[in-house]
Length: 522
Image (tube, rainbow, N blue to C red; front, side, top):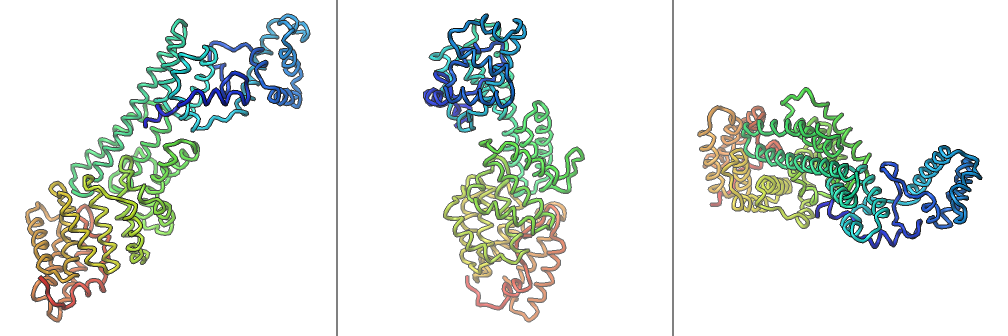
């Protein structure tokens, strides 16, 4: 549900809460100095419940505000007229008005401290604004809307503010304030559209990032740079912590996943992460940030993992692991399935890759990957398959990969097509299905030979290594030595844009197991 529409669901609840502090007034503080009117001070003092009146009066006494205390007591006496009060205070008309204004401010501050107005209250109240407009006395409705405006401005919620200003326009239809509220309405409507645009840019950015990750088509890098520039342009239009957050997510993602690209105008990544964390801490009750903080842990993990600071990265990964199934749904703001691939590398470096298979059994129960989201389905299937390889559950790895190739099309994803087929060659070889392995290997070699340039020379070394163990000559005495030599050449050349299987542990033991003499099964 749109957060703005969710925001004032039942005015009856507000009116019920009213009596907790002010008789016949809803439970809101009174920031009315921002408005061209002030409720009758005496009326406000008289409406205070006795307990609250005594509490407020005692506060004035303790603060040695004798004049304010005396004025409060006199206003509470319904029999006294304004002239009599002025005379008893021995004040001029101007001084009396100033004293009333200051007392009014003190009452406003008192009510603000006494009355809680949580984010939940905002969301509970906005949808019932029409009842305020049509069924509530004008002064009372304005008071409530004034309090709402104050909180919504504080929480950077322009969409909800348009509803408030629309109501205030109606209430002030015959007032000089109508034009002012019309301007505020239009301003927040434009600001809401800008926030929506920023969110769309974030979605487009992460879609393009995923497309690049599977295809390695460098044209996508130009698109990513364009989106980044667009985000910078719109983030300058308003002083908004939400716009700032979206810009930070995009800039950090760009810096972490494309360290070779330079953006001199950006702050260092650690500074941007610190700023991001500070925004979250500054707005702990923001309903979006309460979930979006996972992006901070994700980007922090990716940053420290990419720099080999694995101990620090581990703490952030642990936090994400606790809610991994839900985090994998965050494709509208980050590239969440990338954490699965990085997790394979991270566990391999820490030599605990065999734990993955057991962890994933719980993940599979809670997360259902959607093949329509090709990028994430590929990463998820690849993650499950490699985890199964580490547990020596080779047939399960084959099943995950077969399900993948039968569920999605790799027509636009050249790089992923090569990588998955290489993985299929390895897995089918490990379950002695060499004919199928050889078929996939030939497909990879054909595709590589058809590409322009030498960007996939690394794959050629790996293909030769795999060809040794799929061919009939794989049983020769020096096969393993040749495979290890080709493995070394592959690892040395496996860099840059064409890097494949970097998350797979091609250790000496793994290669020996892959190339050991076994009975061929078709």
